[in-house]
Image 1 (cartoon, one colour):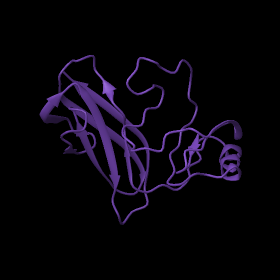
Image 2 (cartoon, one colour; image 1 turned 180 degrees about the horizontal axis):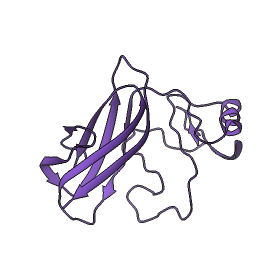
Image 3 (cartoon, one colour; image 1 turned 90 degrees about the vertical axis):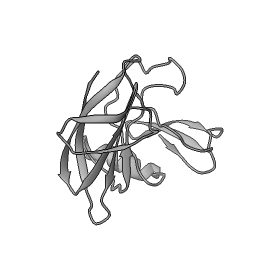
Image 4 (cartoon, helix red, strand yellow; image 1 turned 180 degrees about the vertical axis):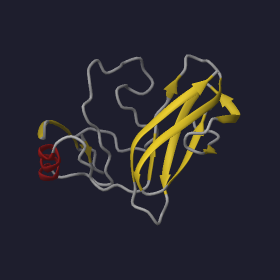
Length: 160
C-alpha cells in the first residue's frame, strides 16, 4: 500500500499493483491501524504475511524488488515506531512489560496505558507500574540519533 501527498493510493499484492484510488485522505494522521478500520468494529478476516513502513512512497520497481527478495527484507527506516491501540476490554492496566529483540542499534522505549496522553519511559524486559493507569495500552520505540538500528520483535505483557 502506498499513498502520496496528493491522495493517490495504490495497493500491491505479491509485488504487483492491484488497486488504485485517487480519493484517499491526506489529512492529519493519527493512529495507524493494521487489520482494523479506526472507530469501527470492522476487522481483517485473514492473514497478513508481511508489513513494512517507509519514509517515502516506494516506486512500483522498488516494491517488486522487495517482493522478489523474499521474507524479512527491510527498506532502511529511521525514526520512531509505535503501536496502535491495544484494547483490553475496559480492564484497567496497572503494570506492563515491553520486551524487545534488537538486531542492531539503540532504542528508547515508552509505554502508555491511557491511549497516549501520558507516555512513560520503560526498560526492555522490566515490569513497569504505570503512574497513569488506563484501558488503552500502546508502545513506541525511538531510535537514538547516532544509531542505525533494527528491532525484530516487540512483546507486551500486561497486568490488570
